[in-house]
Image (cartoon, rainbow, N blue to C red):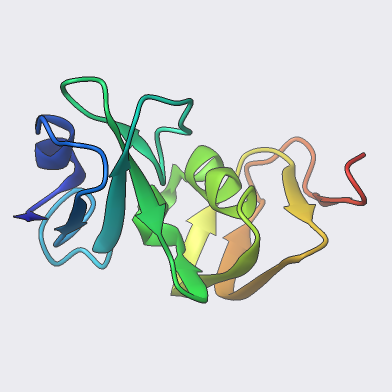
Length: 138
């Protein structure tokens, strides 16, 4: 089943085990397209994973590389993408910024086993312009 956007996906009543896709995050073709597996109710971040109608959840399925726009980052340099970028960084693996600029207004926490590539992070509006690297569960 294919949905145009995350908003449309969230309105769906789906069954655990279903595989679904979106054509974009905010709009079809906005480079936030992704594949999801539907699971039983559980805690989700609301960026990469989403609660659906009927209380199931859609869990982002990323094979090798996850893109920041799949987490709802706007990447226009004006909107604060802090929460979307942090949600992506909370996952492990390779995070790709797709050569866009992301405005961040506070500290990002980066796991040791996460790699960020192709992203320009603008901390100019930040009160603490740094990235904190979390080590070994600390």
